[in-house]
Every structure is written in C-alpha cells, then in structure tokens.
Length: 210
Image 1 (cartoon, rainbow, N blue to C red):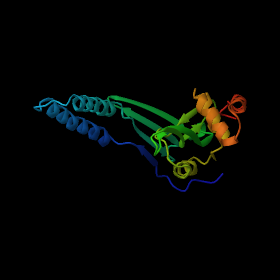
Image 2: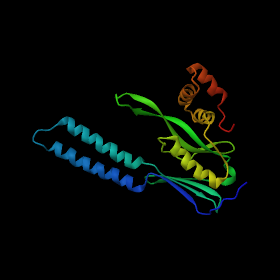
Image 3: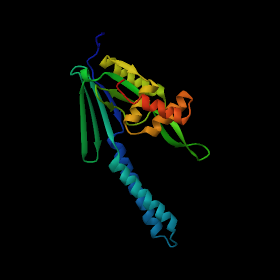
C-alpha cells in the first residue's frame, strides 16, 4: 500500500449557485418579452405562449437545479457528497475504508443529431462501489471517457483503491439502478450481440459488487 503524499482535500463541484440566479434572471427577461407581446397593438398569440412557457421552464429549472459538491478529505479519511436544491440539502458521508472501488460507468443520453433525430450517445459518470451498494459520485454526465477517467484517477489516488472502468460493472450498475433497457443497449452495442443475447448477459452480470 502506498502512502498518500498530500493532506489537501480534493474538491469537485457540479453546477454553482450563480447558475440558479442566471436561470431566474433569464426567466425575468423572458417575462418582459411575454408582457411586451401581450401589450403589442397586434398580439402574436404564438409568441405569447412561447414566452410564457419559456418563463415557466427557466423558473422551474432554477428551482430544481442540483448543486453538488464532492470533498475527498485524506486527513479525515472521509468523502462527503453534498447535494443542494432550492431550500433542500442532503449529505452523504463515507469513510475511506467503506469504499472498495472507484468506478467509471458508461450510460446513455438521448441527443439530437444534425438531422434532428434523437439518438443514444454514450456518456460516463463516476461512482463508488461499497460493500453492499454503489453510490453515484458525479451526476452531470461526462461527454468523453477521458474526462471521467481524469477526475476518477484524482479521487482514486487519494483513496488508494482500485479504479475500474469495465463494461460489466457499468451493465451491472445500470441494471441494479432499474435502468435495464440501458444495460441491455450497452451490452448489445459493446459485445456486438443481439438484444436477446444482451439481455441474457445482463441477467448473468447483475451484481455490481462482483
């Protein structure tokens, strides 16, 4: 076992408080557009509806925006994950000894291609494998595996545990999280098998701790 050479905490942040206020400011600006369209000599109903929906969407996004802070403290040997929503905060603290692996997991996200069609794109996130459960560390999805591995290695070096990015563990985690369709899609795409064969593979590898 090698010794950690630093006692400085590693801090990762997802989103920031200012982003919530930016969304609300945009909602206010959109409300002025809606008010102006409503009071115009010739009312553009379509523009009024679009602006009103924009106000609702931006305001709601500001309320629901998750702000996440991950602190890996080698001095206290504790990882603290704090998630904040508007007037609501949750904290999950784990001792270093509880964490068996750092996982880089593959998932999918629906994105629109140049033809305007929605397609599944691979995305990545970081999780911890504990004795009987896995805990998502990052919620925002990484666009490339290189980016996810970069942050995962920074965490892994402080924890001094194994780092895994295996497809099998991604499939198991997706399946255990109730996202079996994504697990089957990942198995089929990665292994080059049919959907039926991929489903059988998922069923055989549904234990994230294995």
